[in-house]
Image 1 (tube, protein in one colour):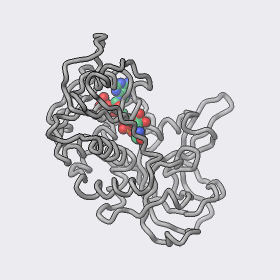
Image 2: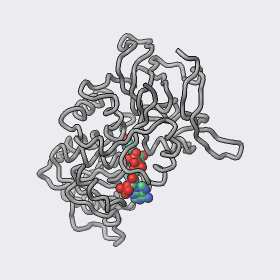
Image 3: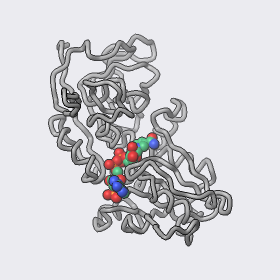
Image 4: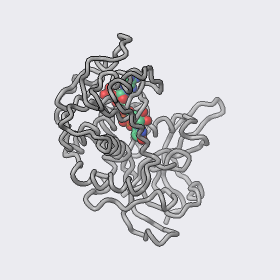
Length: 332
Ligand SMILES: NC(=O)c1ccc[n+]([C@@H]2O[C@H](COP(=O)([O-])OP(=O)(O)OC[C@H]3O[C@@H](n4cnc5c(N)ncnc54)[C@H](OP(=O)(O)O)[C@@H]3O)[C@@H](O)[C@H]2O)c1
């Protein structure tokens, strides 16, 4: 094994500005943990871009290698559950936040964060899904646990053109739901239709500024990735006993809303945190993602880019300019 490896490194300069570039790092940069994994693919998530650009709510210490997703092969393991050569997946927990993440050729992580690659998924497919697909799957599982069913009516997806949004459309559609996609990229109708959306609406339609506490009902549930007034509108226009899976804050972390959707319409807000999802439920969701919920349109959603192309893609995702997902080829 070499004594150095390639990784994207985010650094702060003396003026407090952050820069990210691909560099060589010594293996001593990796924290002492149980499982050393050679990373084959990672993927770019919004959270990675925030980490790379110095968001201390996500990453406290720099220099740092982001990347909340990684798949690859075990090199060494201090626990009996994993052996060299095992194909594995690590997504979420502290990976890429304050533990060096998947944007490097190697990660060293606690065994409790690692799971075998699902049998019916290739390494590439697992990262086409990544945290975005896993979160969409977790959202749907929580909604269905709470009574969501395709017969109840359509499900809204906000931030539909993003990674999580695109996969939410594809997974909902695969599970038999009618999907309404709300997007700033609504003119890209062919893309959303191929993913399985039945209706594509400009995102302004989910940004109601009338001040009304309840709106004409339009959907039976929602997977929201943008927060703020979009989430508020999703809740105010949700049918009785519908479920809104609260996944993201791409527009805002605030929530201008009254209690009326909840106490008059029985609408449920379900908090979704993929990073801390317990391993048994995590494995169940990945099983579904590799089988009955596996999107047929993964190649249409995700494009493979090199580690060297990552810096320009980080800048793009921060500006909302990426459609779908970028899988990062790290090695092999
Ligand atoms: N809860 C969890 O476990 C979890 C897991 C993964 C991600 N997330 C969160 O989910 C969100 C989406 O993540 P992602 O990786 O899919 O990011 P992404 O690929 O950048 O997608 C975000 C999408 O949100 C929309 N958007 C961006 N800025 C907006 C604005 N100012 N107003 C309205 N819409 C806006 C855009 O969609 P359109 O162009 O289609 O409008 C954009 O493509 C992020 O907040 C992320 O942190 C949470």
